[in-house]
Length: 122
Image 1: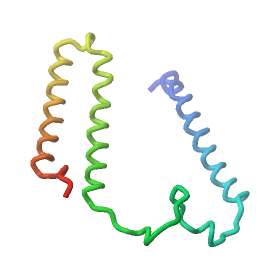
Image 2 (image 1 turned 90 degrees about the vertical axis):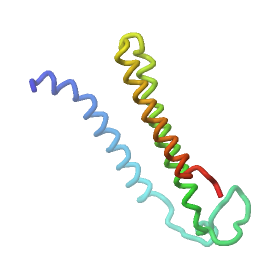
Image 3 (image 1 turned 120 degrees about the vertical axis):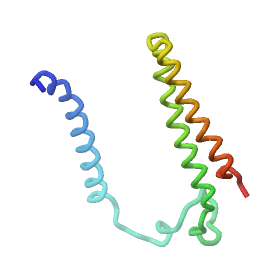
């Protein structure tokens, strides 16, 4: 790679360094400057001003996490459709065929998880 090509990445590297430095300095500063008094009231769990009832460590159903992961998976896949829609005219028929194949794979996966009962809430 030539020198000019590497210089194109300098702003990205600088932004990463500044962001990492800000996070690090903020975490160290809050740890050093923050109050260190631990009282029973501070350590008590807080739920919208309502007095806590029972144990907060009740396990969630695995179905909840499965639905959440599937939502994120399909949400991220839908994000790939936005750049395609922006460049739809430039991509032509090839881009259309590629998106049809992409959506077909997406639908195959969706019907598979429906058939397996991943979205059935019992």
